[in-house]
Figure (cartoon, rainbow, N blue to C red):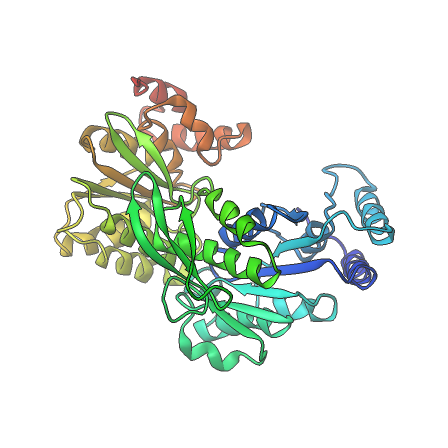
Length: 445
């Protein structure tokens, strides 16, 4: 979405501030971090919605105006000369309403530059700020890790209460905190809100207890999620729920209803009694390593890791891909399959040095065919990638057990399929069409 004028942006900011002044009972939960923001906000919203009216938009905000429009529950019309006027009118209507339509607003803050989170200080005072992670990623391309940490923690300092991920934020950044009302969450037992696992199965997920100051003996829960890093958003949701006074029955029911988001560690049935871990939405050094560690933890007869180029890293790209390749273990992986230039030139050689069998593929079409050939019954293939030029969801598509599961894949809308068709046709020597390739491999039950 094209950013509005500064005048319109400021008007939205002031109207949103007026909304909270008129409706002080409406709670604002702000979520930010280098990674895991969307999973955290959706988990929080899902759990709170068991007993409360929740405002939540799943798509990430691109501009500051997006943040205010999402908070106010107003969508900008796609077309029209007066679309910003119509959006402002919708916001004013909600500000002046005698009773708000929601009790809790869960909002993502997506900083792209330093000073982003601080800019909101004059207009918003979140009741709870959730900081999901501080890691090397797109912001660190131009800024140091310390600067990124300070940017994320700024939101915590400008909130009534802050909830910090103990596992994915280094302790040395605690010096940036000035807010005395700090609580921690994570899978580690040193966090005030944590998860004590009792049992795990690949298909059934994790059973255990949520440990908290409110329930030191633990609340029994079932988390149908895959990967330790995907448990942390659920624990954050539990912490927010306790702080807002949600009943334990609602908390347990909400956590049980959580499912992986599309393209984010979503377990799918593959052809010929195999399993696929769909982590194709995006990729960064932190999330790729977490996905690999999850794959290593599974007790299965075969593991294949399909790793695509991590887009957007620019100056640190070669180093980041080599480091990820260094985490590929020959004793744990039957194959490492790479897709994309940096994955092939930097990740693949490093993986070979670790004793891995490596297959370098020119695109997701070739990778999908290779996985279909090599993956054996009971085996698991992890597919971790990004969008532009990687598109590993298309490699997953031809390995699914059922075509009905294609609805769970990311980027299947017509405009995405057209874009991918153009890419694959141009990229392949024979100009093979995507739909022809897919149909050739759809021999499924």
